[in-house]
Length: 207
Image (cartoon, rainbow, N blue to C red; front, top):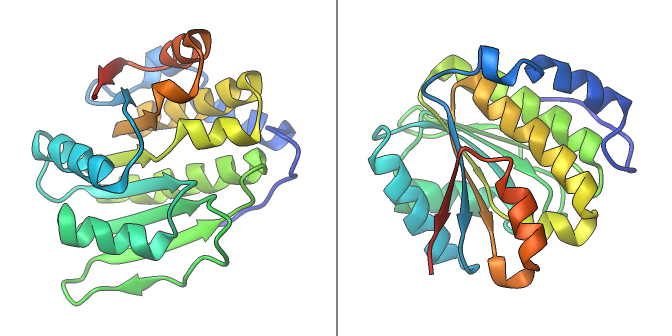
């Protein structure tokens, strides 16, 4: 995973990245599915949702996670202890908690890697997201999570967030992955939630 970008929105390099997935409907895998989950925040709630989603997919998927709220090591340890040991776990870190940890290999052979970028650097984050998906898809059975659309909307306006999420969701489709993106519906007006919902294949409400 590598790359960097400017800190002012989704720039020209991100536009070129989106070319990887402009033919969304023509090239997306039939097995891919990007789901938006409307749910209150909370680590335990999110872990339960991930565990439930994985149980209907495969026992030990390759995992790519995008986080605004939790440092990568905590995410990795939480997944291994509460969901299962993934053969490959990659984290794109926009939490601003510090430098991403170096890659590591667990005793069971599972690998872990993380890279970070500033939460407002959408270009850099898109680059790292695309890198992670490209590398992880080689392992097969790819499951993806985006921990907070609500947090994203604290850093950029709805129009920027929409373009950013469109690129991320298109990447999920191209990789043939299953994905869950989480949003707290009580933190936004109905129009914002409705606009974001339009990007996804399915919407789930969890109280």
